[in-house]
Figure 1 (tube, one colour):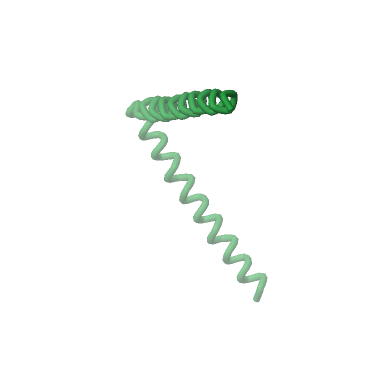
Figure 2: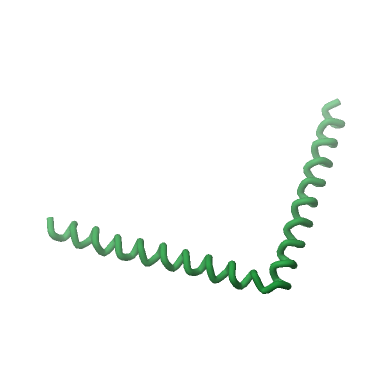
Amino acid sequence: MKKILSFIILIVTSIAANAQTAATLSSQDIMKSNGKIYVVVAVVLVILIGLFAYVWTLDRKITKLENNN
């Protein structure tokens, strides 16, 4: 009974994994064909650069406060 149950669970998880992969590939193809993937990459880069700049300035301010004490 355990072997049959494990086999069924294995089949269900593999089907679910294949279904997710197929959906992801089709959405990537749609975004590439429309040129929207570049917009997404640009927005992510702007957000990351903004976060790094904020952390860098915050670090400089904290270092300045630590040196004053």
